[in-house]
View (cartoon, helix red, strand yellow):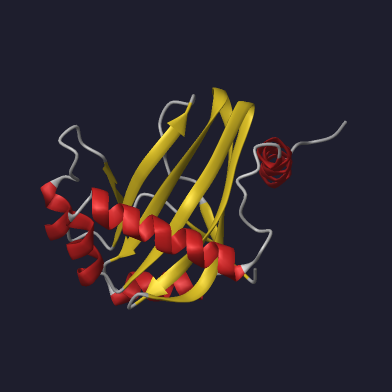
Length: 187
C-alpha cells in the first residue's frame, strides 16, 4: 500500500502538466535570450500602445516581470509554462520561467501574456532573492475592461505587486496567476 503525499501528488501533477503543455509549444526557448528579449520588447510596446495607463504604472514601478506568452492546458490535470524577463529601468536584468500545475474540473487550452509590476523595493527584492517565487494573495489583478483601458485605480494602487493580464486567447475560462511559480533561468 502506498501513501500519496502532497509533495508526490504535486510533483506528479506538474510532470503530467508539463507533458501536456509541451505539446502546445509556445515557441520560446529555442534561441535563448535574444528571442526572449525580442518577445519581451514587443509585449511591452503592445502593452503601452493598447493600455496607455500602464506606461505611468511602469514609471512608478521599481521593476517589472514581462511574460510574453504563457500556455496553459488542462484535462483534469492542467499546467502552464512560459518564459520572460525581469526589467529594471527598461533593461533586462534576469530571465525567468513561469510554471503552474492544477487539478480539478478543467478542460481546454489558452495562451495569454502578463506583466507583474513591482511597486515597492521590498517586493522586488523579495522576488529576486527567492529561489522560486509563487504568485499569491498579495497580487492585485487588473484585466482589460470593456472600455479598452485598464481601470483607473491601477495608477494609484498601493499594492506591492500589480499583475496586468492581457492578450488571452483560447478555450479555457479565466486566466489566473495564483499558484504560478516563477524561477530564475539561464536561457
